Length: 293
Image (cartoon, rainbow, N blue to C red; front, side, top):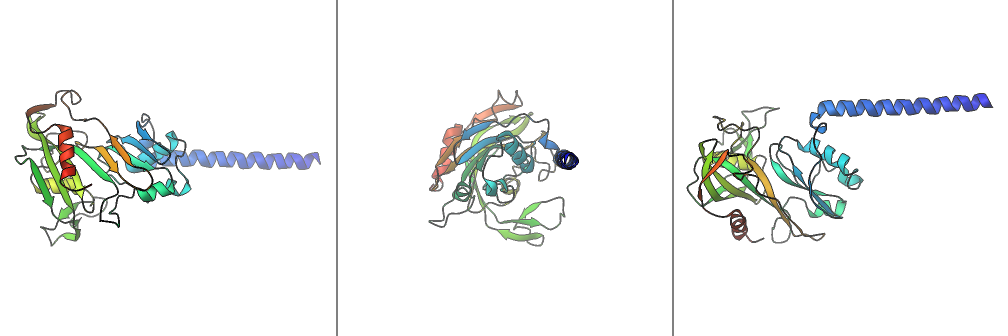
């Protein structure tokens, strides 16, 4: 009898050791595949409720690594269906973008926050507002960029590059999208003429929409190594950040703001203001006035 129990104990210990080894190997592999998952400070939580969490996404962290960090830090936030939301998430951001990142923590909230046009009145469920520094002095106080965007077939995987419908020969499956730009300040970034603007997307969102549209009007994002051939002024990330989230939905109204990251003080003198056209808050409100919420 004692031999039987001893044998059973060995089996239990053996299976436990195997499980721990597999978990350790899986964690090691995931950190090789997703190196951003280690040696990163905790995410800053800006807003938290029973339905939504809004964190600040650093510019050097991909969405895959962000989700991993989020689930580890917040103890596997969300139900089982929502934890798979890295593939069906309610909000999608280009990896180079930073700023507010809303996450639904249950299935009902996830459906309510989907970044798509609502069926009633064709209104968006999620409104996102960005501040950015672009190259050159923007002369118009408001710019509406209405150009279809599709996949540029001249660039193959793993390089993904989009294009506007102006180049029909290479632009695959162009779809409607509109970007509204409101000028905030003009000045100098690293002693080069630059402008601070706020942006909002209307109608459908397209991959790299802001980057493509801003390049189209001759004012690429500072730090854009894909659509700005000159790459100057140089910076280690895209100078664009999501600073306002607005959503009126059936689950919970979401109104979250963050501070302007592109001030003279925060950029350590790299940004100098030449002229102020609008205060940042006034510019954000003007984006709302361009289309009914």
